[in-house]
Image (cartoon, rainbow, N blue to C red; front, top):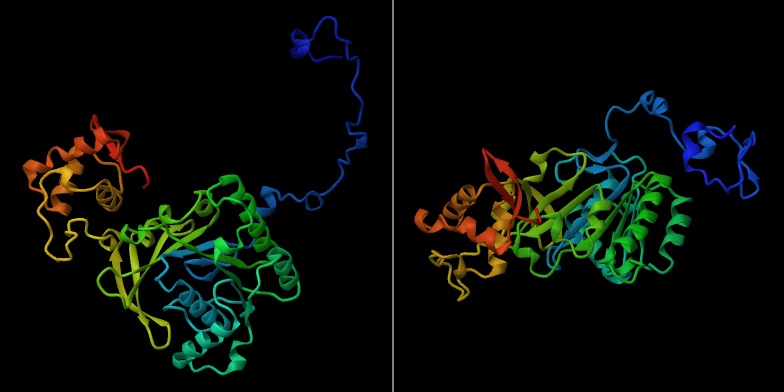
Length: 383
C-alpha cells in the first residue's frame, strides 16, 4: 500500500505501486544490510566514547599534532626551510625543539625538497652540525626526497615501508598539481590526498608555503598566505615566520591558526634568534604582540626614522590604512572606539581622530557586524 502521506502527490494516471519488495535493489545489485561498521568504513559514537584518548595526540606539544595538515609560511627571506630542517633534526635525534619536548615515536622525518638539491642540502646540514655536533648515525632517520615527480605514488611507497613521524614538503607551490592555487575546488581536492595520507600512515604532513607580496609589512595573519582560503582552511595549524622589522637576526614564530590552541597562543609571537654561522635558531624567551610586528605606517618614505605627523585620513594610502586596520581593529568596535585606536596608535589628535571611524565606514574599509549598546559595531573584513 502507498503511505497515506504520499497519496496527494501521486498522479492519477500514474501506475499505482501496490507493494514494495522486501529487499531494496540498486542497479540490479542487492544491498547487503549485514555488514559491520568496520566493513562499511564508519565509526559509531559509542565506540568513540569508549576510546582511551583524553586529549589530542601531539608530536610537539602543545603546538604540532601527530596527524593532519600543517602550514609554515613566510616571505622569501624568512629562513623557513632552515627552520624546518632544524625541527626535523630535533624530531630525529629526540632533542627538544625551541624548548618544547618532541614526542616522536619513530624518530623519522621525510623531507621533500624541491628548492634545495642534494649538493646544497649536504652543505646546509654540515652548517647545522656546527652547533649540534651529532654523529652521522644519529641522523639516519632524517630522509630526503629530491624529486617530486609522481609525488603521491612515491610517498605511498615510502610510507608503506617505513614509519615516519612527519613529512615536510618544501614547497607547496612546487608540488601543487592543479592549474590555479586560487581555485578553491582544486586546492581542496589536492590537499584531501594528503589528509588521507596523514590518516593512513599516522604522520603529520607539513607544507612550507609563501606569503603574498608586501605581506611582510602586515601583522601576522592566516590571510597573508598566497592562494585560496581553502589552503589554510584544510590545515589544523598555520604558522607565519617573520623577520623582525628592526633586527634581522630575530625571527617571529607566529601561530595564526591552531584548532587545538587557546587564543593566548595566537596573539603574540615567540622570538627566536637566527645564527648565520650555523643556520640554527635559539629561543630568546621573549614574546611580542602581533600588532607590534607590522610596519609602522607613520614612517615617511624618505628613509628617515622620524614619524610624519598625521591629522587627516587622506595622508595615508589605502595600503597604509589596511595595515593599520589589520593590526588594530582585531575585534568588533564602534566608530568611537576606532577613533580611539587612531588617536592611540597613529598619534592623531583627539579632535582630528573623531572623524576617522566614519571615514572607514564610508570607504567600505570596515564591515558592519552588529551592535554594542545600540551603537553599530565594525570590524576589518579580513580579520
